[in-house]
Image (cartoon, rainbow, N blue to C red; front, top):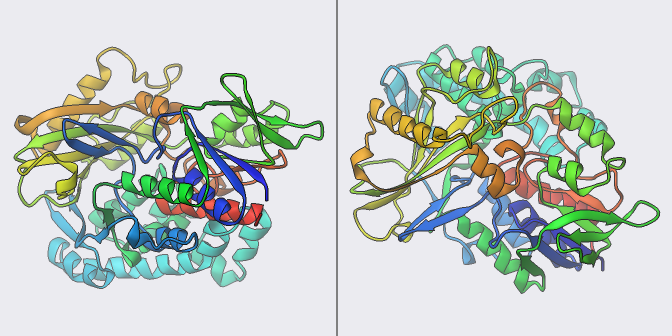
Length: 496
């Protein structure tokens, strides 16, 4: 049995802690904030409950597996609901598409909304996306990252042709999607990893396939209940969670192996193994000696930070009827949006007319009473970078941008300005402070470029006994990948 300290009680840290405690280790989780969940945050105000991070569960079998393999069926802990409509999409020409949540029903609805032949185009693309999934999910998502594993996993010339590592997601889509609205729909999936579809690898085609193959799910009471369920199961297994404890550095012995952590108050916590559920840049810039972190820092400097997001939390009276759970109002110029967010053709800048995503659950458990709504509104935004980009703390900027988003929603047919009881906004600077993520980059590194997967930090580190878990490390961000990251780390550490 090893003494293990997990730094951070985000989903990755809690999932790793559950698995390691169940495997026989003595695990303590240290969390600097006053609640668990990390980026799976929750804000409660005047009876309204808002998820401030992920608002969608995809690949639900990964969550089910986590609880099954640690002795507690997931249905006993959270109430998962499959959504009948994955999302409503409004395109710049005014076309509205209610995308079904079952893959077999999608082609007919595409033909109805976008015109005959649209369903066949998307079906053709999904066939290629499924091939990519079949080739990549084992070596790229479910195994520790190494050049040998990843290259070895693409075993044949046919596999290489399927993955097409030399192509972008948009380039692959152009082989199948002649309708510009379908191309826009595909582009959006690059943002699931904080990336630009013009530069993200074709392998990301597996993202829409996985979402549509397993469906879109919601947790009754809000997704924050996932973190609560993880915490409770971990404690039942005998683990310990300490809130309000900030780790200042990871300590090592004379051989260079991890021997514990030092907290901000100067106390030392001994450990045989440390698992860092923190942004990789924070780990290598702040928690480790410069010599030990030299190579990972070099690789991180070569990667492109992911985009951030600007969040509006709207407490509404008399919300519009027939509002879908997920709603996307596409930008008139998607390329201009990516140029602005990533700083192409000029410095990074807030998008004047961004794509707007709304999550509007029909859930009585997150509102104070009938006739009210808790809406989560998100737009892509450049990271907080006062020196070379956008200073989101500049006086009045966040307030003005919140007003701008509300006007854009109204222009696109969803005007709720006269229904707002309370409005809370969370800028990239706020995200940086709330999640200790540099610049508020939601996913750590983006997937921009064919080498992005190899620049993403490994789950192992140059320091023996130190492991990384979470969205900024392999295999990436999003609830299912973060939980797969935890499974990889637990497998690397082994049983107690």
